[in-house]
Amino acid sequence: MDNRNGVIKGNIDDIHRVVNGIKGIIFDVDGVFTDNRVPEGGDSKMKYRSYYDGQGVSLLRAVGIRVCLVTNEKDASAKHIVDVVEKWNKLPSSLSAENPNGWEHVRLFTDVGGEKKSAVAEQWLNECNLEWNDCGVMGDDLVDYSMFKLAGFRSVPISGELVLQDEAHFISRRSAGNGAVRDLVNFILEEKGINSLGLPFQ
Image (cartoon, rainbow, N blue to C red; front, side, top):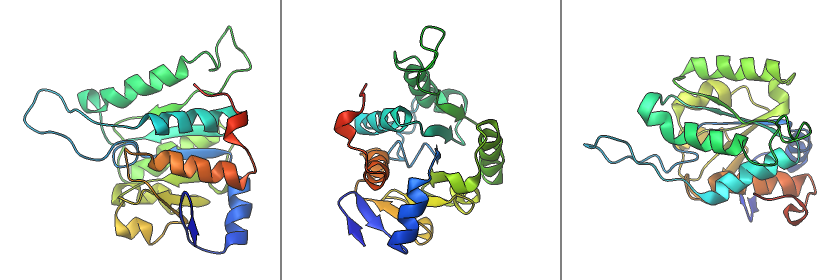
């Protein structure tokens, strides 16, 4: 079924029930927040992401949905997302000593691939007192499948690999690094009956 944010697969009543119960979202990074391309041969790996997606993360946090990122990248290759998450967690709306009722921090795990992704994701879920059924996952390739198969709600960018698209409940309208995360967030908010215009934005 087509939706303005993407393609929905499965029984729409079941999906509506699951999405309304979502309390946390776990994202892969490259191929989800970035377009999965890197220039080779230089001293650093330049990667591109969309501010639309960053705003989407803020919208999730504003409605109390916990956010976790899990990536196989490490060291210099992960610096871009380490810096971004640090910036998100320092926003004025974020939980801090000055703002004890602020948004929960975004959790980032680096240097984690394959089956280990589901293990660290489960560690995070336990810390948040959440279950897999309370959680959505957005991934793009086989390295994300260990998390994907456990999640209550599975999503993938339109640019993601077909093997994950075949298993997904939601496929974004926009590609990775170009608004795919925001498409998912917009869909979740609409399913929950929340107007994003009434939420704080940063």
